Length: 370
Length: 162
Image (cartoon, rainbow over all chains, first blue to last red; front, top):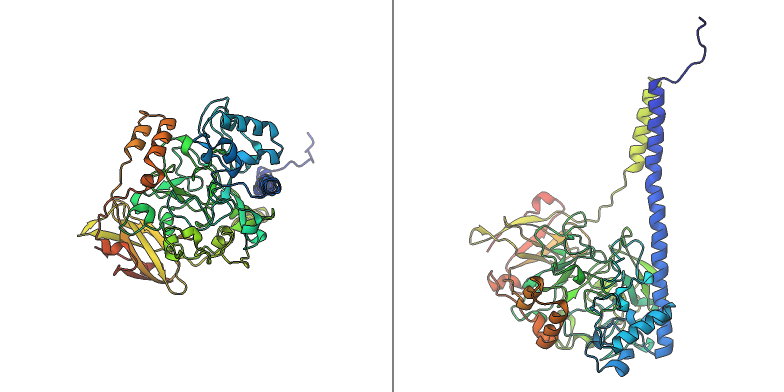
């Protein structure tokens, strides 16, 4: 028997090779995941840009931008229908996003007196519109037949008061009171935000900060008078921010129903569905008084790491870090406004730093830089 | 032996590569206990209102033991070193009966929206419960509570007995 000269691999050698391959894969995998997220983020950014351009095209035709609520565009035709003020900016921007057929359906449904919360398979707002869904937002797509949502929000400005106060200091206005045109954006179109991303809520059992709405009850402010006049203090929202992107345990989250979650109705202008405020830092908790439908203040948010994309009034898209200067979060609208019953008349600088400055359209902060 | 050393080297190198580099944003853990007449106060809002340079307003809620851990109003976990005025309030929850009926399934969303429209928007948000702690502690203008947050988290324990 001749001794074989062919030497095989020993077990240790094989194990070492496997370990090295394992380490290499371990190094590569995050890179692959990051590349996939980068692609999703790019699509998300493109869609945001399209929204910005659609708003510009809307302005070209109507001479004002789409409103946050009380669409001026609908008023002349449908003001007889009691629900017309509840339709969102997205419900009138469809023709400028190559969605003419959908637009016709929406106009017909509004004309027939349907409300944007009507849940039925025949309602146009019970259809997913891909252009409103950021691919990084895993909750964005809803089952057909349910009222469908959006991963994008319109900027409601940098001051928040009560529910009844619909005239904002931002791009998103109440069209019934004052529609915003380019001439009103005196801070400069490239210095004022139009739309941002905000993820859709994860449903009524979710305790995630992003997309969730904490109900703080009467603890919102700190003065003894009734709540809308308390002067909302955004810092109180930080009280419910726990670790790992969750609310602190015991936080009341609006559990009224999965159909009240953040962003879940693209056609509804109510506070929890289509607007965001440039007050709370991006990716921080959104807060409501007793329930999200009554009145709430929502933060911009995204699943991209470290911040959110926003589109400015000139159509340019920028990335805003979640560590952006948000000024003094213990200040309320009452602290800065000269006329407390009409804080929207306040024309001075935002109390909420660079973020607030980007949110106001006429705050006199023309040099707000990121 | 050589193989083993190589393997160790590979593991060490990958460990260094995989671990990220943390950035200190300057926030320091700030904790404490809130008691009312000696017993723990649960569910209270503790707000740190920044006074002067460096400080950044923050807030916290207390758990059932009265403990809190404050967060900055910005992204930071903890507070930035500096001087703070502290306000503490706890308000009774006001029950929205119509909302309770909706949650219980006695009325539909459509009906709730109608009721809401009838009640008027102003009335909706006008409900606020009575303050369960002395009113003076609720406002930064009247509170006597203060805290000085330092770089050392061990010193940032502030207990408040109301």
